[in-house]
Image (cartoon, rainbow, N blue to C red; front, side, top):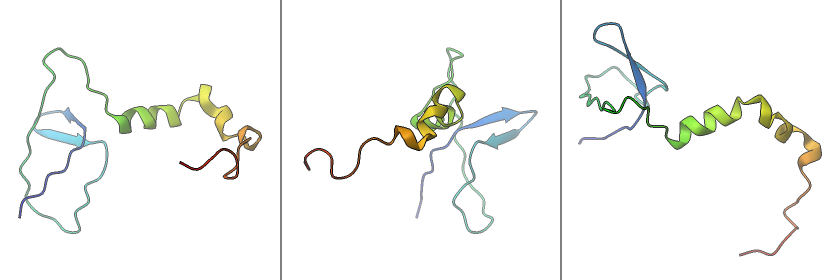
Length: 79
């Protein structure tokens, strides 16, 4: 059985790949790695990266204020 895991990382030094997130593996095993490099020099930002960036952005800190929670589950109509 072959499984694919899509994640992002950074090549550091010689022959070293540092992943942004851990892999969901329960034991050590050999893996096949395909490295995709953006030829334009721009990084491809996926949704997880944007969410991580927004979560740490001080300009959005007001969203953690409980006073901003003005709606409840009883508001609006179910779809």
